[in-house]
Image (cartoon, rainbow, N blue to C red):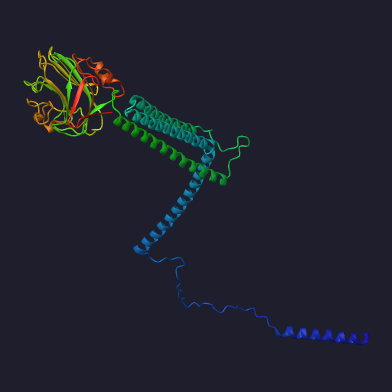
Length: 464
C-alpha cells in the first residue's frame, strides 16, 4: 500500500512544479509610467468652478425682525420659567414658615383665648339676665305699689356697672390675645424633650384647628360688641323712662292747647328783688316760642318768663325788653332727652344769668336794675298770660283761657320746678342739674316741687 502511494505523491509534486514555472514565464513586468492624465505643454487647463463652502444669503429687514422676535420670545420664556421656579421655591418656604408658625402658636394659647372668651361671654350673659330680672321684679313691685318710677339712681348705677364690666372684659380678652401671640414660647407645638417638629399632616390639621378657633373668637367678640350695644340702648331707654334728679313725678302736657296749662300757687308773696327758678323739661317739640314758666299781673303779664325758641333758651325779667338769650344751647334733635334750665336775677346791678344743664350759658348785667317783682300775680307752667282776662264764665273755673295762645303752649313734660328768693351760687346750680343726683330734694322756699300747690288744667296731668 505504501509502495503505491509514494509514486503518486511524487507525480503530484512534479506536476505542481511544472505549472509554477509556466506561469512565471507568461507574466511581463511593465515599469512604465502608469498615469494617463498627463498634461502636455500645448494644453491649458480650464478652471473648475466650485461653490463657496460657508456662504450665507443676504437677510432682509423682515428676516432680521422675525429673528429678533424669536430671540425675544425665547428670552421671555426663559424668564417666565425662572420666575415660576422662584415663586414655587418661595411659596414652599412660606408654607413651611406658616406651618411652623401654626405648630408653634396653635397649641394651648388658642385654647386659653377661646376658653377665656367663652367664660367672659357667659359671665356677661349671666349678669345681663340677672339685671333684667331685677328690673322686671322692681317694675312689678312698683306697679303693685302704684309707683312705676322706682329708684332710677340705683338703676343707672347698675347699668353703668354692667357696661363697665363689658368694656373691662373686652379689654382683658384683647390683652390676653396680644400677650399670647406676642410671646415666642407660648403655645409651642414642639416637643420640649426631643425637639422634633410636627409632621406636615399634623401641621395641616393644626392649621385648620387654629382657623376654627379664630372664627370662634370672632364670634365671641361680635357677641360682646352686641351685648355692649344692647346695654347702651337699655341705659338710654332707662334714661328716657325714668325721671331725672331723683324726681318721683312729672307734669305731662300732651299737646299744644290754650286750655292745657298748670297754675302754681307760691308759698310766699312774690314781692322780691332777687330770685332763682329751675326746672327739668322734656319737650316733645320746640316752636319759635315755647313757654315753660311765666309770672305776671294785670299791669305786666311778662314779669318772669323762661322760654325755648328752637335751639335757644330765653329768660326775661320785668318785660320782654329785658331779655337774656343763649343761642345754640338746646339740641332739638334729641327731643326725648331731659334738659335742666335755671334763670337767676338780682335787682342789684341788674345781673341776670341763664344756665343750661348746669353750665352758665349767658350772663348780662343791667337787666331791670332796681326792679322789684310785684305781688298778686299769677304763675303758670306751659303757657303765658298774654292778656288781662277775667274768669272764664263758660267753664266755671279761674284762668286766662281766652288770653292764651296755643302756638306758645308746651307739649312735653316738666318736673323739678323750684324757686328761691335769692341767687343760687355757682356751685349749687350744677348740683341741681345732675341727672342721677337728688336735685328734686333741694326744694325752693318760694316754689317747692312736690310741696307747693299746682293745679293742672285741660289735659295736663301728673304722671309717675
